[in-house]
Length: 266
Image (cartoon, rainbow, N blue to C red; front, side, top):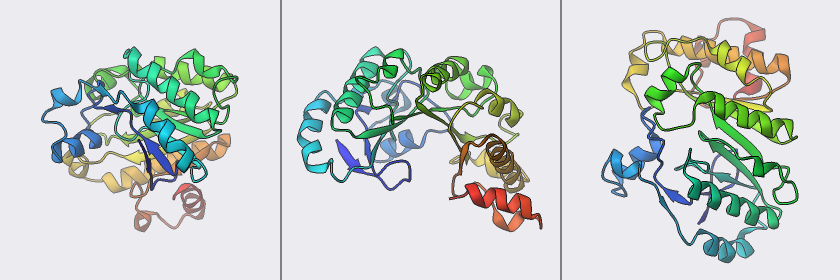
């Protein structure tokens, strides 16, 4: 159940559901990989999630062997831990978090669902857990197009703000961020909505030919990365620009811009 991760967010990860009802059409990298390796046959298969029924039993077996090696556990790379309006997924995720936190193992989460109030109970859940949401659109009209069954944007942000106000660490993933030929929007509208968070991660739109068909997409992503980095610098928000989202060769001779981007770029 627990497997080693190579990302900077956490050194171990866990996926306790096969598939995701949100049905994102970016396209979704997780769905693409599952289809390529024959785990699922179609989009319909993917959007009918199946819970790993013995998740907690597997954790009980694996944690004694691995807990000394674990820094943080990431939930989830190939599914959503708080799948919108799927109560059985939410209930299992809460049990997983409780089990991890009993062993004083922190968790980092990312969701397009709605975080429940239960997570503010510090007698049960580790106050150092990190809760994130994905926000790449300024309008729910765009969200319905690309994230058809995910939670409305305002509900995601409100739930995250609730956790922030309870003193918990919150973050936002602005990935995959679309080029203007896919969606025309003002990135500053999004940034204003999420200005309360502790960390913002920005990344470009991948696995879609429409991005590279936008004539100046490299300059566009440099500009968007600078907007995010500057916003974070002004508000003392931790910033991370995903690798491949900026092109250093296109940065002009502007030391402030270069310093701002290099501070955030990993």
